[in-house]
Every structure is written in C-alpha cells, then in structure tokens.
Length: 392
Image (cartoon, rainbow, N blue to C red; front, side, top):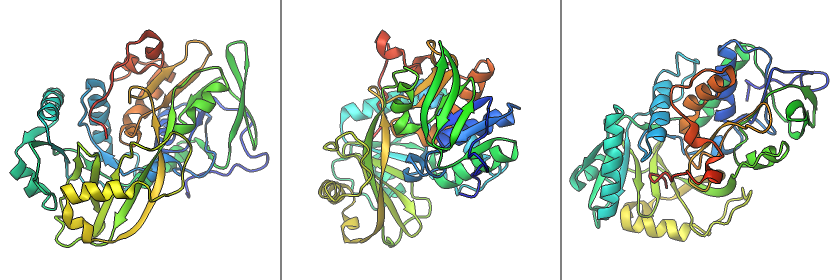
C-alpha cells in the first residue's frame, strides 16, 4: 500500500516515543490519532503489508446494533467518523448507509433484539423492530418462511476496509508518523517493569511504550512482556457471487441470525459469509470447501434464488476471538507502558475509529469519551466479563 514507509538504512528508526504493532485498521487508526494529537516519533510496525491481515478480509460492515451499551457507544462513535471520513482523515471509503437487517425466527431472538433496540434508541440510534413483510420489502431475495420478525438499524451499513486503512495510514504519515512494513517484532526487552527496546527483523527501536494492535497475533506479542491476552485465531470465509438480477441499490446488510448466513451488495453481486461451528482454532488462511454445504443449506432456506447464482471469488481471514466475544482495550498494570486494543471477535473493523481515539486518550492520560474499564483484560481474572450477544 502506497502509504507505507520503507525506512532506509537499518530499516527502522533508532528510537520512538510510541511503537504501534499492527498495520490494520486498529493500528493505523491509533497511529493517526496519536500523530494528530501532536505525539512525536510515532512508529507503526507491520509484519506484512498494511491492511493485509484481518482488515483486508473483513466484510466491511459498520454498525451500532449491539446488545451491550459499551459496544453500542463504540459503534455509534465510529459511524460518525466513517460518515465524515472524506474530510477527516481525508479518504473516500465507499460508505453505503443502507442499514443492517437482522432476520429473527424465535420468541427468544425477538426479545433479545427488542431489549438491544431499547438500548440503541436510548443512545440515539434509529434502530427499530419490524414485521416480516417489511423485511422482505427491504431485502426481496429473502424467503419469509419461518421468520417471526426482524430488527432494522437504518444508520448502519458497509464500506471498504482497505480504503479506511489507506486513509488513516496516509494521514498518519502526513502528520509525521513512520509506518514500516515487512517489520516483524521478534522480542521486547524491559528493565524491570519498564519497556526499553522493541526488537524487529529489521533492527531495534528504543522506546518506552508499546501499543498492541496485532489482531489474531496479539497473544504472541503479549507473551513477550508477560501479559496474557486471551485471543484465539479462528478462520472465517467469504465468497462473492456473480451478478444477481434486480438487486435493490439500497439492499441492507442482511443477517439470518439463526444460521449466521449474511450478505450485502458487492458491485452487481453479493458478498456472502457464514460462521462454521466446526472450524478449529488456528492460523488457517487457506480456502476450503468444507463449509459450503452448510452455506448452501442456509441459502436454500433463507434465499433460495441465490442457489442459481455462480461464485466469482472468495477468501479466508481470521477472527480474533476472546472468551466473551468482547474486545480487550486497556493498559497493563504490570509493565509500563504496554497498551492493547485487540480481541474484537469480528467487530474490530467497525470499531476502529472509536478505539483509535480511546488509545490516544489512554496514552495521553485523558478521560476517554466512554468508560472502557469493562474491556480491561483483568475482567477474566475477576470474573466480571459479560458476553456480547448480537454477533454472528
């Protein structure tokens, strides 16, 4: 990606005020927000190319439709940032605010989404419960069979993940940050509980602060400083269809909640995905056909016309799963200064703008716009964690 900086000579700067590890949406957002706030000598390290990890494999959905007030706040704040992204940081991201449509089959699902709708409405979001006939008008390719109702959040939608990374990276560079690709962290040295050096395959960087935004690889980075970040990599796969006749231009991001089958427009066709309950944890990035029979079954039940549409492409990427499907955001209290923003369990891309603000404020000793203490990794030791339920 053009916004990356290939540092000359030894490969990386000799020293930095802050080293951000990870060049996806989270890392580039953090680098941008720090540089914009006037933090000098911000260095971002990416082991491959910018956005080449989970960000480039994301479906691109952006939403505030969650069951947890904190996730609603993070999603809503990020939606505001995505809406003005062309002005700040300055990049077109192909944002389509066509809404999110959750299709619901049972009384329990209806009650779950009624409660989350109340929370979203209290936060100013226009989410509403709708009848089946309205859901079919919004997404004509779905079958109403077995549906009990739906939840529609009109302010949500989808955009292009790679463009978001490019926008943050370009602006961060313009503001003085250094972004180094092909720079893998191989160790972090500390004197007592104070970070001293980040060691990479391209040289060492003297620094007192490391920010972990390494996604599915965050557990390995945490181990280097004795911090347990319970992040498990889990493969998810996506396919793109050939052109689908008569697709509405404003087709929502549509999720069949019972099966997790989802789709949104991708050019003349659809981007389609679904979770695989048989998937085993690990850094598996190869595409397989094992999940396609389950996807075909879900299509036959919920959108049977798609069975006649061919596939043009697809890819595999990694979710970074935590035990409660909520992010890990905070600063470790055992080693100074190690901050982390990881474990987003499938909704990291859509929360990237808000989390960039939060990490900036934690670093600068400011009060973030929302209390993120529930996302501190210590919640698992204290048994105070709670699960996010509006996930697929």
